[in-house]
Amino acid sequence: MQTIKEVAKMAGVGLGTVSRVLNDSGYVKESTRQKVLAAVEALHYVPNDVARNLRHQSTRFVGLIIPTIWHPFFSKLAYFIEQELYLSDYKMLLCNTEQALDKELRYFEMLQKSQVAGIIMISYNDFPEPQSDLPIVTIDRIISPRFLHVSADNSHGGELAAEALVQRGCRKLLFLGSASPVPTEVDNRREAFVRKARELGVSCTVYEETVLLKQEMPVIQNFLAQDIPFDGALTSSDLFAAALIKAMGEKGRACPDDFQVIGFDGIQDNHYFKPILATIRQPVEKMARKSVEILLGKINNPTSGEDTIIDIEFFAGETIKPII
Image 1: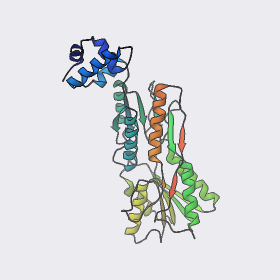
Image 2: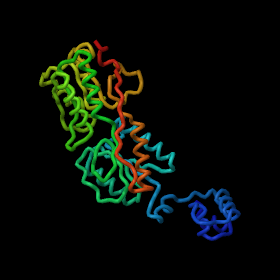
Image 3: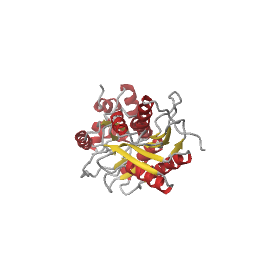
Image 4: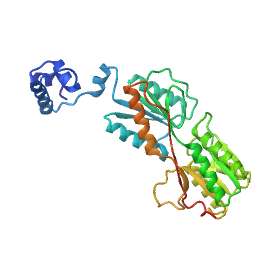
């Protein structure tokens, strides 16, 4: 691998001149700049971004801490965050925590030591407020009032779901899903759903268990064992909705004829799945790009930016009936 010294030797200039050309900093005569660039091209020299940026106590790396890359919602979020960072000449370091607090803390420490430019993170654990000056943006959960926050309008989503089910004849509503040990945006969608159901004069049962991802079915089975009647449900995620439909089908109850279900997230992007799920679609791409926009703004100006709530979209699908 060629070194910066060899570039300087070929161009007939000092190391400082090569550094100024590569970093586009300081004055360099145009003729000298062209000599340096010609030497870089001839030697196929690739600058060491990490070493170069560490000398300036900063890098063009951004850390993304997420609960799991396995879940379609988080994988889509990571995809669009990486894409948006790349467009701004930043690189993403992906930290997959498997919802474990100790992994979140270790990754956070690692990112700090790596001197990343900033961090975007999602945590559903009791994550202690970091004593850090790093620019940090959180998604779907407020960890600290010092960090800016991006989320979908979960309250509006809960209200729309209740209205949609009642409009289609449901009178015994259910909110079913996973609870978190700390406040999250799921609380907002649940509370709005229950509140709107009561405003519309129908009953509403809440059944939640604190579980990890991929454990939807045990929660569903525990709920069904209690034999609580319902004719319309909002679940905390699309995966919970799919699990509920499957479990009820095994009991001989068809959706939407015997019960109606609305999920939350909007991860079913095509029509190959049957039935096509009714859901509250979170604007994943908008949330991802806005998070990057806010973070890069704070990197350049620590006082910039504000919390952002992005509107959701209701998609009727095939797991609810037409409006009566």
